[in-house]
Length: 165
Image (cartoon, rainbow, N blue to C red; front, top):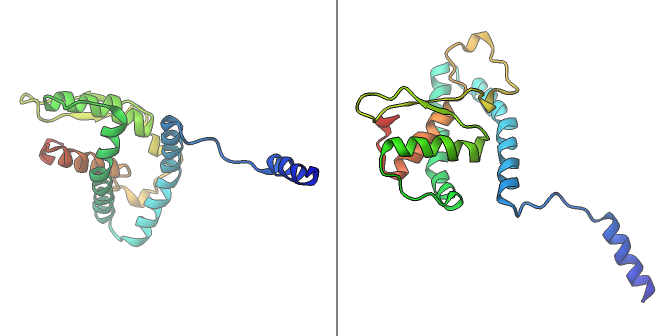
């Protein structure tokens, strides 16, 4: 019996695991860091696969759109946000809650048009650009175009018109 308990304590000494991901905040933080570190590799691979920057931009938008259509459910479940009353409120929630939740930044909502159905989200610091130098030969590359696709896909799932982007 003492030999068996000795084995258990030995196993406990060497048995280790990563920090608990039961906390949604730490899980999102780890996911954000993973996205930031791997996004450059994704874009680099697209640069090898596609000849023109316009094709890379379209592919990034398409990937983002697919992510955005699926991300809405996760966002709504985790944020406890109620339905927004108008596009202005939707833009504010996206900027202040969604961007903070998934990328750790909060963009400014600016440049509203007269009708209130068009605006820009301005990032002071783009977390996707942290470890990247874009070669001169890709002067038309929209490096963060996946974010636009995510927004377009998410708004589509929420019933907002993609033209509002």
